[in-house]
Image 1 (tube, rainbow, N blue to C red):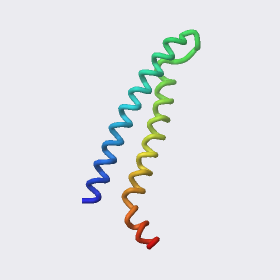
Image 2 (tube, helix red, strand yellow):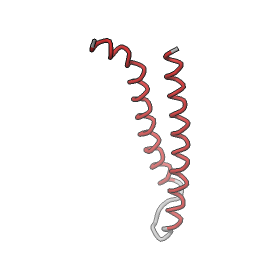
Image 3 (cartoon, rainbow, N blue to C red):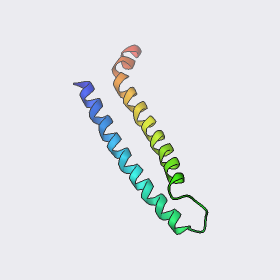
Image 4 (cartoon, one colour):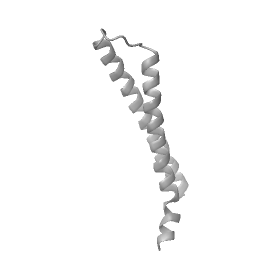
Length: 79
C-alpha cells in the first residue's frame, strides 16, 4: 500500500513536470519571438534548454520519490 502511494506521488509529479515543461516552451518561444533580433534558433536552442529543464526536474522528482520510498527504513535506523 505504501508503494502505491509513492507511485501516485511520482506520477502526479511527472504530470506536473510535463506541464511545467510545456509552460517553459511557451515562455521561451514567446521571448525568442519578442527578441527576434537575437540570432537564436527556433528549434535547436529550445530543445536543448527544455531537455536540461526536464532532466533536472526528473532528477529532483526521482530523488524525492526515493527518499519517500526508503523513509521508513531510514527512520528505523535512527530509533
